[in-house]
Amino acid sequence: MTSSISTIRQHILTDILKDSARDLEPDQDLLLSGILDSLSVMRLITWLECEYHTSIPAEDIIIEHFGSLNQIKNYLDSRIGGHI
Amino acid sequence: MTCQGVELSYDALNRRSNQLAHALIENGAQRQDRVGIYMHKSLELGAAIYGILKAGCIFVPLDTLMPADRLSFIIRDCGIRHIISSNALSDALLPINEEQSLHVYGVDTDNLNNKTSWSEIAQQPDTSPDLPIIDQELGYIMYTSGSTGVPKGMMHTHHGSITYARWGVEHVSLTPGDRVASHAPLHFDLSIFDFFSTAQAGATVVLVPEAVTRFPASWTNTIESERITVVFTVPYTLITMFEQGAMEKRDLSSLRWILYGGEPFPPDMLRRLMLTLEDVRFTNVYGPAEAPSCTCYDVPLPAEGSNEPIPIGIVSRNSTDIIVDDNDEDCAIGQEGELCIRSSTLMVGYWNRPDLNERAYLFRESFGPFPLVYYRTGDRVVRQADGNLQFIGRVDRMVKIRGHRVELDEVESVLAGHPGISEAVAFVVPDGFDSLKIIAAATRPQGSVTDEADLLGYARKKLPPYAMPASIELLSALPHNSSGKINRKLLAEQWMNVHQT
View 1 (cartoon, rainbow over the protein chains, first blue to last red):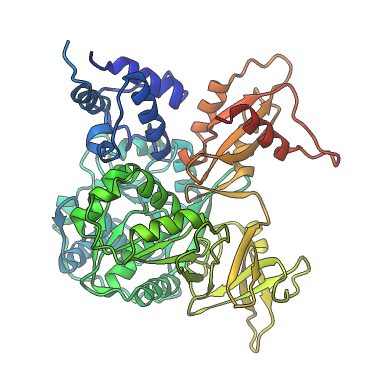
View 2: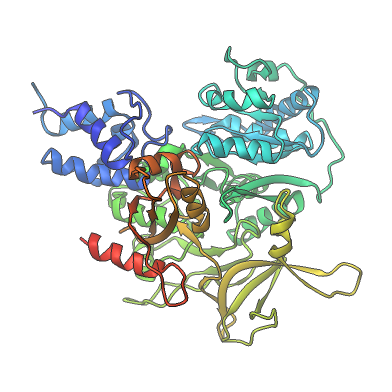
């Protein structure tokens, strides 16, 4: 199983930001562009844990893992043993 | 000063600031002109602050996350013509530049005409322009939420900021060995402590990138790797650090003092944090951005299971206070009233807002021709028998959202400005992290098809992210209480009943 950038993107735009028309590139900085703030990071984590049946330890919730869609995918795939 | 592993000595910072000051003067910046700072945390940010001051100008921090309309409003409101920015951010300035010509520094992008790059600035002399600046001139203007739908700019003098900075140095005994986190964004008044107290002590300012501050574990990693000794922040940051920062996995032994302010700290949570960081001293600092750090309280360990709110303490040096009732008469000890502050850190008014300035101050007679000037904080307090002040609540509808000041009236006024909305209200509910979130409700005129997404999209163009409602409910009518006012309390209760999990 692997995570899907488009599913995560859709969740961020539709459920967290409620702005589905917005552009969101895989490498775009989610924090500096104001798409995520500290509260929505926590909501995203909760959703990811549920969606991908994994638990994300607190020490892993760092900018290097959640700064962009690509980083989120890479981190999750390493976590859930992603291979196609 | 250090940022992401790169260091800048105070000598180098001084020379770089001198060069920027010369560049500003050469391009026509006049003494007391307002100069914007629209930058992410970087070493250039330090040069921007001091360069603007050395040119005799006033720095105006501009939140990099604010929507275009708000940015444009502030630039026009205080007449900014020079602005320090970066290539990464300067696109946001293009539409404004079409209406009002801006000279942008720190960029070398093709799409701006009037610009000066850092490499051009480096060609300027690195000696001080040595202007005869006096301490009663303005040093910075900071914008905050205003109840009428537009932000208001608080004008601060050099004198006020130096008093604030010295208070910081003395209160936590800063020395050159200290490493102080610049955690708050520049448009937060905590940043004055971070930059100026630290510089006065010859200590190191550790600039923490904005994105790091959103991740509790990145933040604790930074404290460990940067050997941070002093932090001034808001309770929300400390609570999330405690709950999600994996503190037990980090060596945080460098920390010696935590100052916090902006909103009350739940005592039981504070107790748990203090027991975890047992060698760290904690100070509750109180002071609206109009009168920073005017009172403080060194917090002893709260008793187990205590719900007793933490006092905001007693006035700091160079400050004095009175508590007044509805008729502006002094309150007795134990009697609740509005806290009014006279302090050297007090702002000298809101920029270009005589209407607000008239209401902001309370005057008392003095010996000479000038009255004593007190700032009306809008905070209801009571003086305890031991002299400490206890915060009770607000006289108006200002709320704190994770440390950010938000006027709910501003949120309502923005929402009601949408043509497809007849009436809008905003209220707060707990956010599950010991702070609050904003919920709005609105009604539509006959035939309006405006939905929640339209309204959120509209508000996003006007309000900063922290002031955005988490959700907006469209109702057929708003409940009113017996006096005919909209019953916001009932709306908040109903919302919580439906959404309680």
